[in-house]
Length: 405
Image (cartoon, rainbow, N blue to C red):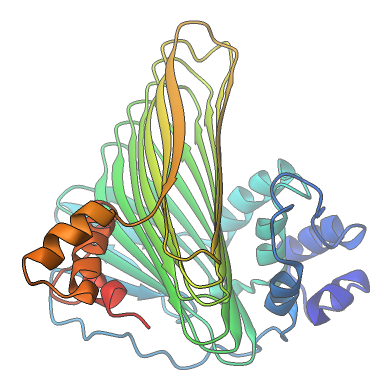
């Protein structure tokens, strides 16, 4: 693991920024996460090692977005494109955070980071240089849909960081796309700060090419009366982790999450979520789906934390999983930690196979077995895909999933 060896000797990066120095110092005494901890015990050691076994890319490769932006009403950004962003329109503005604003915010986050629980973020920030950190301040209404791309180059590890401040009464739809080239790794950390009465429909779509790896973390802080909606999809990775941390800082906020990971061959993809309610009258509706085929491994672990101050919390966390092979494996563990006594909280998990009765019915009507399978999978996928803010004319995710080999 080339990167870890360099962290141990503090030689991973030349001309380190202050943020990188702080993170490297935190990692140096214990550069790897504890494999016995709850967050890492199921992680495949060989695949995790493969994620780290690349040199950090010195230059960002030229990136061609997968679909031409034919719509004038969609705003696109690519993390790593060294450009200044200052869009000021009649109803909204999108401005780039200054370096001082970024440094102040990131330092505040780092001060609260635990080496094991926030290892992915510490690694990301220790490797992200300033040109690969994008900070945006978004304000206003009637904002066009936004697409933000992160990408990797073959035979290297790329680290990208995204920070977004949504100001009061802001309403935005944002799709984040992580594209990972073959034989490469992408480290992506995202930070959302939602001010009072703001809302965001956030989509995260991540997919790779042959032998690609992803470490994707998401940190969200919600103020009162804010609403955060997340639709996510991860597939086609040798190894991938999606870590979600959401804090309702004062309560009285809404969070809706619908996510899915799809594994085939010998892939391992996992999702870990932690939702903290730090005030009363919070709301959460979460469903996570895993589909595992061949000899692959899908993982979901989620926790809902409701302290005494978070009275009248209404939270639901469900895990719905589909196992397509006797050799595949799914691990799921939704859990509640409740101290408050006036709450409505529930959690549950199921693991099933394709419905044999439905397959028999469709085949008796002349539908072939492959087509019958696709019809069932289409229904299973659609609940999640429909929650992702995505331009249907460019991103036909359902077709991509059903025809993925």
